[in-house]
Length: 346
Ligand code: AMP
Ligand code: MG
Image (cartoon, rainbow, N blue to C red; front, side, top):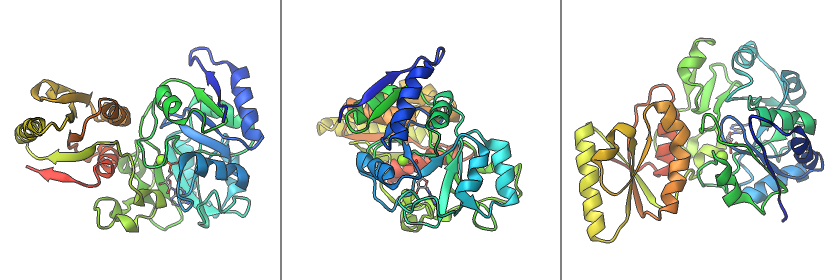
């Protein structure tokens, strides 16, 4: 497939280019564009044949539902019913932004979009390019992360170009995503709202505006993962080519253990990558890549570093563990999945 590429300067957005891409969406074709979370692979959410092209381009299982992206809050009432008072509070407080809400769907949303479910996931993104494209398309846009299913989500223009050129009708290249982790997914069809996927809007953030919020308990353990309430959380995900292990415990012990394992690996010609916080970088041997200083930086760099490890052809990756407060919850969720839940406690 010939892909039309639009390279956009964020400081001087070329609206004509974006209109060209939005026209492809109106014609039932697929277009990749940046959002504040990760790059999304979009198509008209209300057109079944357009939505099928998303599943094909990603190789995504058909029972894994898509998030519907809207331009204006008023569209929610066309797509969903039983919009509760809590849903109103969440939308007013956090939209546009990196949180997706699950509501009961109306018939206008095809089952292909909702992965066969009676509910629909909706988000209003804040990214300038995403907003402009959705507005110009004039329809709600289903847009999962723009990676081949199972791979780390794309957070930089070169990630989508390298992986998806030729697989979609259009790609808008527009710099780096701001958060670098996918949106928080919050189920509002239950009495006590439940986080089905942690993201940069945290449980603590949500509890400031609605009293009680739970986290899907099946997210923390491998054995329970099959019971995850968001179908997408059941699948292997965020996996680089190398085997990933998380090493957890006292900082000094973690550093010693990782270096010992790296040394053993090198004797056996196994190339080892290490992911750590910046301040520890100099303490490690092997292919060491720092993830950043703060949890926010770690979150925004994680997927890029996993892809960089692939480029460096490492066979094994050891990662430090991170605290599960705030955005750390989302980081550890993605890291555990990329490691297939393999944790070495020291
Ligand atoms: P992606 O857009 O690829 O980052 O994935 C969207 C995530 O939201 C996946 O984990 C989906 O399974 C989840 N999701 C989308 N729609 C629903 C829904 N109606 N109910 C539960 N989870 C959903
Ligand atoms: Mg995804």
